[in-house]
Image (cartoon, rainbow, N blue to C red):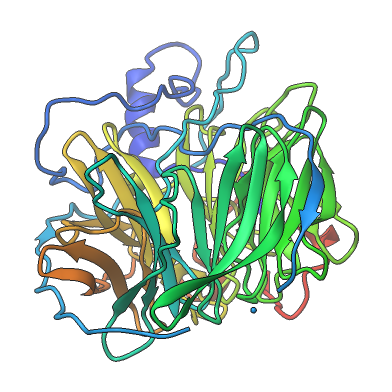
Length: 484
């Protein structure tokens, strides 16, 4: 796979025209973007392909050593249906942009890399197979805010929720993550710097709990559910390295499975086996953030994944194991942009103009599965955060057009999943429907003339001397062959 910063032709022409001068060079971008600031409340933008700047959206790295302290041992049922939500009206989109030539990167050598901004995580965490989901919900206590875990069952004819309260309220800072067998992992901060792990499951009228042990560390982040659905991992960033810990599914409580040099954040699974984990890493001495692959079956062997430009910050946001579609955020074009590429391909990373919005932040949260070797056909759902709130964006690489929709009332923002047939499921909770799912079909796009089939969807030929090859061939990627 080769990666380079490519912008659409409409943007390149406009910038070139503005840069009047003797040197016939394309106009340079304006540098890294500042985080989006709130503006007057209003309706989501009507023009989906406006030019602008995306704000960065990853979590900040943290420092913390850690060692396992305690260990535990390893150990569902159900409730009433709810009616679906009526159809959601779309926001009109503008015509697709025209593809184009690479843009030059200008950056201030004295400036430090932009720090990623912290985004609010999804209000509902989905299991790897989407059969279950879990969240913390208010207990409604008169004495003060209390919380308890709630498990949603999504693979039946109608969704329903099962409360999992214990004899004590939970803290809002706790994390919950469902397993594919219906149990729910909960991480609690029992004391400053001490994190405990337990599995919760319904037992008739009550809730059963299995202690899994604890870790002592300043900060800890649960990784997204692995593809196997029965394990859970956590990142423990330290001063010089980041530990990857198995916190559920091990034989003797939490255990370290990898130690990655540098300070890591993010976390994306690249395969169906849960072996290859992509992390966003910054070395302890400073420098840009680069996505790397960690092989958990080879003692945490690290392989570079994204190297769009030598000094650019290149983060991986999502990956689809079926098609190989990668969604990245990078400031290689001169400011943070949302782009896409193909795992194992020699084609460049593209930064579509329709995903460049001036006053909103776009964050992908679901990719259509089952599109084998057809990354440009995958429907992608994006969370759009702006001054007017949060809503839903739908986009395909082949369509080159961002469709914007109002989310269902009570949408658990940032959560949802696609079926193979291209139907988006958006969980929501509102009065009269405390556990429900709205269905939204992916809009049909007219294929862009420059988009062809297979992994040649990027169409434009990479400019010689601009692209930097991604050494992904060194990573032990198996079970999937991508031509090109």
